[in-house]
Amino acid sequence: MSQTAAPDYSYAGERVERVARAATDVRFDDRGLIPAVVQQVGSGEVLMVAWMNEESLRLTFETGTSWFWSRSRQELWNKGATSGNMQKVIRVLVDCDADTLVVEVDSPGPACHTGHRSCFFRELVADESETPSAGV
Amino acid sequence: MSQTAAPDYSYAGERVERVARAATDVRFDDRGLIPAVVQQVGSGEVLMVAWMNEESLRLTFETGTSWFWSRSRQELWNKGATSGNMQKVIRVLVDCDADTLVVEVDSPGPACHTGHRSCFFRELVADESETPSAGV
Image (cartoon, rainbow over all chains, first blue to last red):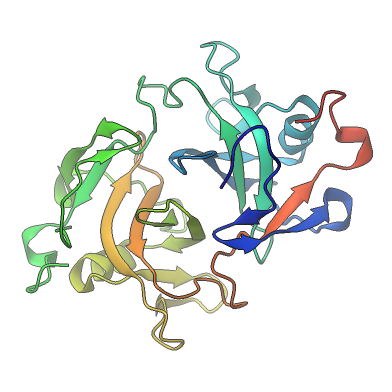
């Protein structure tokens, strides 16, 4: 993965195909939503996962900052517009069956509403009975 | 989940809290599913995003390999059991509101059914009208 300046046409060590939004059948679910994994460019940290609808995807392209649909508030939100921790969108990747996005961003500040850098600051540890005999 | 060689208790540059599965209210949606972002440990590549139900999460802990719920086939699947491209699970992270997982894995082979290393091998490019005047 590369930096802000030089465009990178690879991901996970392979060349990426560039597909036009209009020519791609992005599959929103029955609520009109698609999950978007927000990843810091360069480090690869997964910062958060949120949902986009058609309009938030359009706004993301239009503004170059990340827009999502809040399921709890039922409204569009421009990530960081209140906190100041905006995410500069570097590129948007779409998966093989076009029902999930990876949004590569440059996020200088924390991404989580708790103040953590990433929303994934907790490790889920197996309960006793679930632990494999030979440690994973 | 336990470690391979060197246990890492940080993610995105911060110390992770370890929370027991039984003590954590993992929020499965109304279909009983939770999205799981599968990430290659070390490189940070997002390989795929799939869905887990309660049973697949339990099997993931129990076997140390990744299990998901296939929405199309309506059955559990052990990733790579057929292709041989199994994913060794290093740890499972849960986000702030416990409705999304990051599954850190070691996946030596391709993760996508197309043969690509990652399912995210396509970049979605804005249509003309959506491009910001100053390129993203």
